[in-house]
Amino acid sequence: MKSGVIDWAVNCYTLPGQSECGDRHVVVAQDQRALLAAVDGVGHGPYAAAAAIKATNIIQEYGTTESLTALVQRCHACLQDGRGVVMSLALLEAEMRTMMWLGVGNVSGALCRKAAAFNRKSETLLLRAGVVGKQLPWLHAASLPVVRGDVLVLATDGISGDFAESVVPDREPQRIADDVVEHYGKRTDDALALVARFLG
Image (cartoon, rainbow, N blue to C red):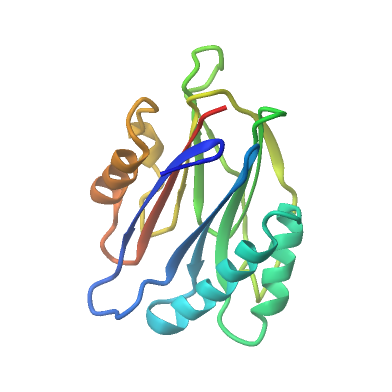
């Protein structure tokens, strides 16, 4: 799906025997910026899904006006009376050609490079231990340069962490998301892969 500065797609897998998936995503796109988030409610089933939905609703509502750290803090305040979540968020800015990203818990992030000018094929999000709603770590959003064609993948812990090795930036985002879930999904947990290509 093309939205503003990104072309994006998602694939989600619900653990068999559960009525709802505890992994959710948010995409908020404007003309020159796009916010993406992958959220994993602690545990499985309806209670995990309820916590994840609460967090994604907050991100959807405030994502155009607040920083990544402020969004996480809002989610933390809202979730203290129930289950917590782990999450990773990214904000792509077309005018500055930068991406800010932040992770709490174990939702992996990888920026897969299209351009040969960069020394590494991919960059990995530094995850900080904690649970939003229960134990919040010190928050710091890191910044990276991005160019047209770079691909961001956010993946919950139902997907093994070595998925970035197989990402081919030239492929369509939906195919990338489908391949990540199909080939790297553990099948012992809910799983979600959110993929966005930067259009510049």
